[in-house]
Structure formats: structure tokens, C-alpha cells
Image 1 (cartoon, rainbow, N blue to C red):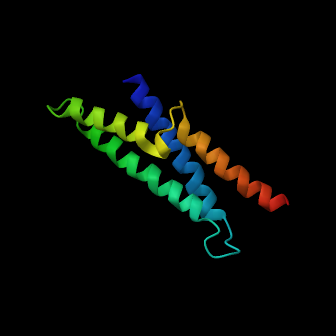
Image 2 (spheres, rainbow, N blue to C red):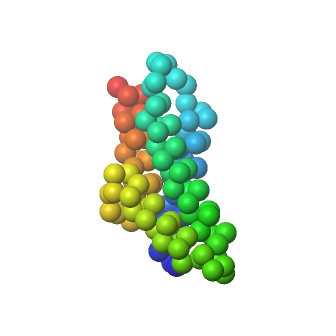
Length: 103
């Protein structure tokens, strides 16, 4: 269960960072932030599975929903296996934005 909580925290943190960036970003060119939007969409997809698992706690379908949440997280972002992979991916995306800004 601790692993599930850590993964959910990773998702929420990454979504908060990416959404805040997108709300404050100016789009100079069409599609300039498509990578951010794509990242947010993938994170939200996994978050929905996690929320469904959380709502199933204490119910007969709990085990199945928890497994679905773990699987969704593991398969996300191309199946990258790493703790905190959503925040890590966000930092990578963000670093490309900062580099362009200061170039």
C-alpha cells in the first residue's frame, strides 16, 4: 500500500507542476506546449485508474482495482521503471522549456 501511495503522490505532484506551468506559459508558436498537454493527458489517465482503486478500498473489488492502478502506473510513460517517474519526466520536459527560454 505504501508503494501505491508513493506512486499516487508522484502523479499528483507531476500534474500540479505541469498544470501550473501550462496555466502560466505563453504559447509563442502553435503546438509549442503539445508535449506538456500530452504528458498531462497520460498522467490524468493513470490518475483516474488510481482514484477508482482508492474508491474501491474496503470493497470486494479492492484487490482488482489496486492491481489495475499498479499496472497503469507501470505501463505509463513507455513502461519506464523508476520511482517517481512522473515527476522525473516532468523535470525533463520542463528543462527543455527553460533551455529554450534562456537560449
